[in-house]
Image 1: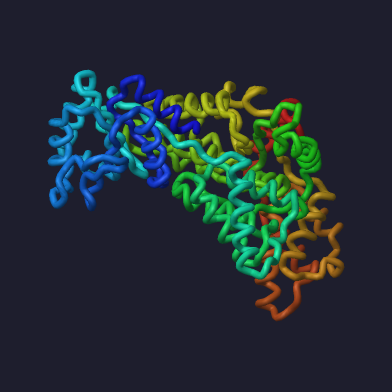
Image 2: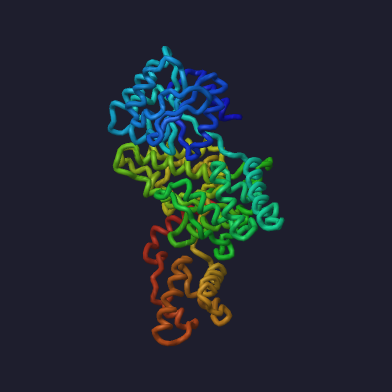
Length: 493
């Protein structure tokens, strides 16, 4: 077993303090018991409720009735023991804050390790050691189930459901099953079992409809609400007007990204540059929908924290979550807000950039980046060069034929009969409009039609369009400059 061998190696390296962060306490204790037996050591478990008790065979370290529930008392007792042993200290993390006696006793035991080689395993869901203890410690993460183990869990849960339903079979297919296995990677075995059981017992099947629920539950279990959010509503590309080149590019690379056995290099990501309201955000959502992957949205501007080092930590935690959610699409929304080269933030943006570039270069997980930006001039060249991202697409103002499609999409969404409208006339009237401006014109026209007690017709829409000043007029100089810059430097989306 990999965990047993690796922890045994750490113990052989004479590490006095071992930190294991996990929600699977029982699994961790089972692993430690196997390590102790291989090492020929006694294993004792401590918790504030049950005190100090022995887990493997042999006499208890303390007499019954005096289990040493208090951490300071327990550590003093361990310090006095001359027989080397392993001690699993469960949920000791609250006592490492503002309790200098506890911290000092841990340090005393660590400093005395070469005389009496006790090993203290600090076992908790989350634990941060005080700085004075870190140099005597090592951290270990329990291995997560691979594809074969996840499939084994699915078969076990399917058999259990079948046994309880007169031999009925769980309905699924190989394609969906593979997607379920992919989306459950990065979870502990107990969490995988819980999510699979919930999906199967809901309706006796594993179907495409279960994938969004599994991904949402997985995100909730990872507990990283804040700068990263889980986008449940990923758009189908049928709801996105235009973007023909982007659609073609994504379709030709979908299998290479999703297939572990592909001989092609896995796609890394893209940058979507364009006019505000042109559909960059909608396209980012549609990438996840087209590839059938969960979508994680990182609000880059929300990374910033006034406390030193916390901004970079926020980014590391967000990227760690993306790795755990793999395979997924990571949408870096308005990336220039966090990576701009302004030079007036005491170097925070440079440190953020360094953290992101290191992760992009070293990641082995299937995380596809979709970065969106309104102002590429603020981005550092090392972020957008080839090799970091695969391509830069420019999302321009929609052409006449695309504007017709956008009108049809938004009218259909609002239960209007598209055939009743003159789409050519509407498209001609909205030259220079972005997709979001077309949608807002439809919304405003619906309000006007309702106030007049009339159904929505082309003339009412044309009236609202005439009353609208699009961004291409209000900020014509900036948008013209952006379009000129992008003409020979990007691929039209």
